[in-house]
Image 1: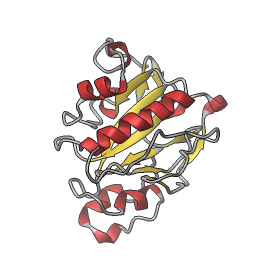
Image 2 (image 1 turned 120 degrees about the horizontal axis):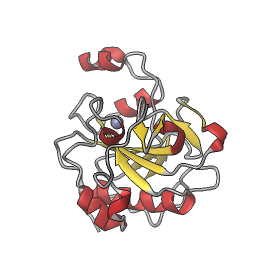
Image 3 (image 1 turned 135 degrees about the horizontal axis):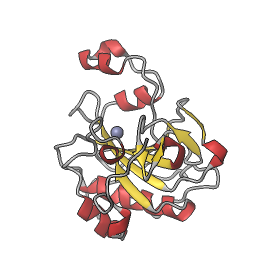
Length: 207
Ligand SMILES: [Zn+2]
């Protein structure tokens, strides 16, 4: 048991793609979503990081951004995200709290221009998880614990067989979750095989 971490038991993803609410799970439906083409089942998990402004944690700015309610005047850095309409399915906060914005059966807008295994538009076939953090600051034990539980719930509900960072599906454009993410720990704790994780296949090419 990690002191201070939310105590969620095994997480359950309902048929409609929402996590069942319990302690440590919150829900803020985002308008930034649409349908997956042909209602395709997601097969890829994409990990990100975010903090607004970078390196500042625990405020409401990320939630406000994903709900198109961010007060751009509240911080000079927020000009960088003026007018953007983005979302992720989930955010895992530093204390392990999981916030869901979009049901997994729908398409969240997290990957942008991206490529995986010869396919573009990774949003079509992926689930996006944001870790509150930066590329260089280690993620917390509570975040790894919540990520493990959330990943297990996702794999129980969807045919997810591969995991990548945003940096792997948008190389040269994105750097998250960055060197601060411990892929070996993630693999060990979630029983992922090497062939399911980054660095095990040639750089995929999308034309
Ligand atoms: Zn990202």
